[in-house]
Length: 121
Image (cartoon, one colour):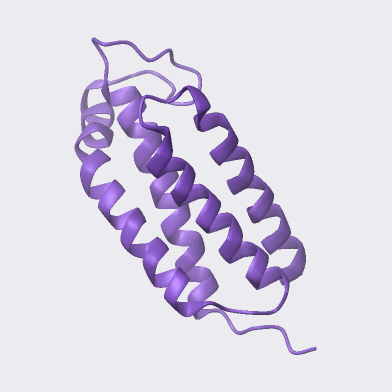
């Protein structure tokens, strides 16, 4: 089961990195998502790269700190669906909210990868 979950998460993070091509700041988001995909691939192979997991945790926490205010503003003032709403200059919290959720997903996944027991083969 862990193999399936790890492979699905790796595929999700590869997709998330791929859709960053038109983002205003694609490099650090692509790095976050691709490194998360690599961590999931390690997990699928029954390996854990603890230093990589801690680096990803740090990257995700920094991104959450940067974008968290936008997420809070969306939560307080926005009534749009973050997934389907069009980003505009008048509503920067839409993009910031999406980015915050993406970083949060990455953080939760690497915490799970760090603390779950590896499958015994």
